[in-house]
Amino acid sequence: MRIAVTGATGVLGQEAVEALIAAGHDVTGITRRDSGVPIIEGRGGNAVVADVFDASDLARAFRGYDVVINALAHVPVGMAGLRPLAWREDDKLHLEASVAIAKAAAAAGVRKLVQESTIYLYPDNGSDWIGEDQPLSVRNQAFRPRVAEMRAAVDFAAPGRSAVVLRLGQLFGRDPNTTHALKATRGGDPILLGKPENYVTLLHHTDAGRAFVAALRADSGFYNVGGEPITKARWAKDLAMEAGVEAPAKFYPEITQAIVGTRLDTQRRSLRVSSVRFMSETGWRPTVGPSTPGWSRR
Ligand SMILES: NC(=O)c1ccc[n+]([C@@H]2O[C@H](COP(=O)([O-])OP(=O)(O)OC[C@H]3O[C@@H](n4cnc5c(N)ncnc54)[C@H](OP(=O)(O)O)[C@@H]3O)[C@@H](O)[C@H]2O)c1
Image (cartoon, rainbow, N blue to C red; front, side):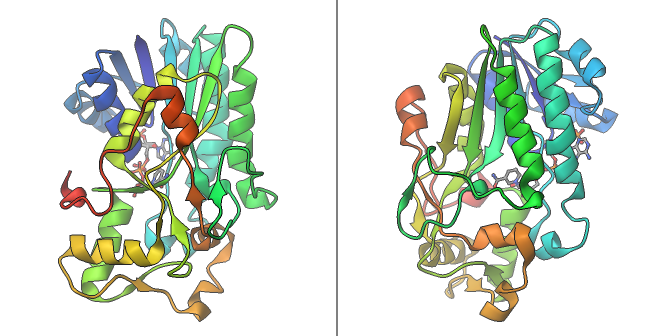
């Protein structure tokens, strides 16, 4: 298939490009900057420079493609997410660029849209499982961009077209957020939010890349994508093991956790998320878990 990928130079996008090429697809990555071109070509894709906020520029770039995969994101690293305006870029990408991408894809005659989303829109569900039918916790204005993005994907799914929204687990691997977490663990600094008994659903970035390939086989709908959920106490030990230190990663003190604000508060939630729907519909399986030695170098 001919596939265009937006956000192709990011953690998710690069993995998606590489996995799609390996699966035999003809892949073009979109970047706003000339310096993004060698990154995409290094993963085996073709590169096009275009503005992801400009629907007509995008419609030109998407013409002749079967599928558009939108992997745009700009997630702040660690506690930088507490800073005022830290989420401004990420919000703008979801509120404006994702909407422009869905509209441009429809205008260009693209048949399928695969949209990256997140499990962090689900409410804390303790030790109970979370499936796709669980109502989302998106009342706060802070989640408006993600809601607008979902609506744009649903609108794209008119007759003759399909839209697959992937609610991805917390990425781990070689990415900036995990590298920061491993550094904090080595230094004995706190890094984890929530309680040790809470659940976290992780997704290695290589498995995320393969999920974009598997999504090509899925019908329109929302799908959770993550590995087997584990407790945060277990994740603290896995981080220590990978960091090469004895002491488990530390949790922030309750007093700090109480003031992290709406965006980082999502990371305090207990999210035991089931990906059974995605696995049974597409055959996708996670291959790298947090206890797989060397996961931060893969
Ligand atoms: N589910 C999850 O847990 C999840 C999901 C996504 C990201 N993350 C984490 O977030 C951290 C950063 O992710 P990342 O490295 O992928 O993000 P990033 O490099 O900041 O951005 C990813 C892509 O978005 C584009 N982009 C970013 N800001 C833009 C803007 N203002 N205008 C237009 N395009 C823009 C970039 O394209 P250009 O080529 O045009 O620069 C880039 O390809 C990582 O640690 C990652 O693991 C986690």
